[in-house]
Image (cartoon, rainbow, N blue to C red; front, side, top):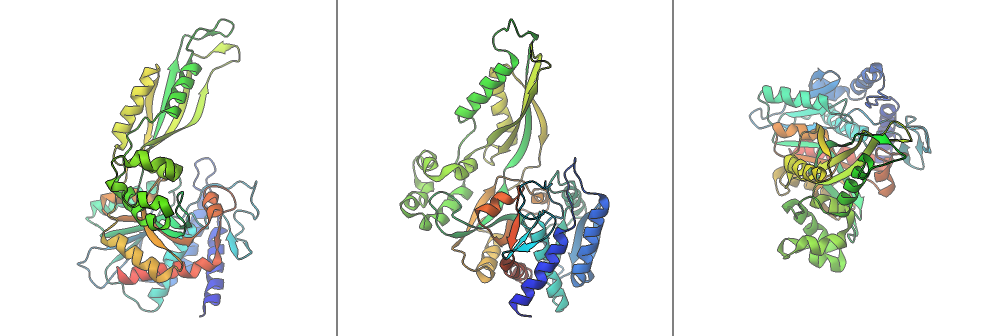
Length: 443
């Protein structure tokens, strides 16, 4: 089958996956029948992979085991999830669940996050299994059905694996892509490979008062307290700033493509004050990797337009750095909140992730696969994801979780993830399958 025929076949398969709405948002969740139909479609599309694997289901999340030649070697795990975020109709050039192809692009919710990755992973396994290939070691596949909410499926599967004594040498999940000009000054196309992710903590800050009529307001009422607090946090660097070894390695790999700024970036770990020197030059993307960040996302309080509220609150999304961690980050912001008379409540703490070794075997294997299958990549670059993925749960069974999807995307595609007009270039489908096949053949 030539490349054009493969592209046509692959496009049709991914279209069918996109057309089944598997939204996992708590308020707009797709019917259970949709998820069941989707899992049925996977069996139909990838019969050889399913025949080669033992299949276990965890309330809709999937775990498959493909026995390998060396049963004594530690197995490896491949991951991509089934569910997608909601997609309103407004602003879409093509209906979000139409799977329409136009201008060489396949449009629809999930093309990039993450049905495209799930399709490529299983397509690679299916083709290899059809050829009679037996992997060098056991290969497992995991696909959660609720990654976009809390990842309870992945959490349950990772606990089951831990309880049954299964450990992995390597885990490969979704994450970064091949992108152009990823940070200020870096010119070229880079495979951005996630080696970990910042952990999420959701906090609520509350101000209280005795209330009263708005005609005779006192000073420092609850909304004013909150405003002062948010303004202070917005103006000041609350959290510890550090140039981590991962970030230093990222900059050293990007440095040859950064012109004059690259001379500084390439020796970041040797600068006396690397953060003060580099932060103004490298922009907000790098800034978010230097420390814990916090964003105020919801606010409420007050009962009437002419009454001082007895209580007002603001909710914040905090992404914790590895060097400061969750507990120290919470303590830092709670101390500031107390200064403004606010109570701090922890609404939710997500499971934190570890950091894979960007010089280790798993990372090096991904580098090899990228060079062998994805054309036009200038360098493979480690980074820490600011978003969450299901692979954080698998740190309990593996220390080397790598987060990367083999799709080349541009800025508009990056913005479309969880936004509108999500699409994938159909010319990237064949290389994506070849990437996964390379990994499976060389693990």
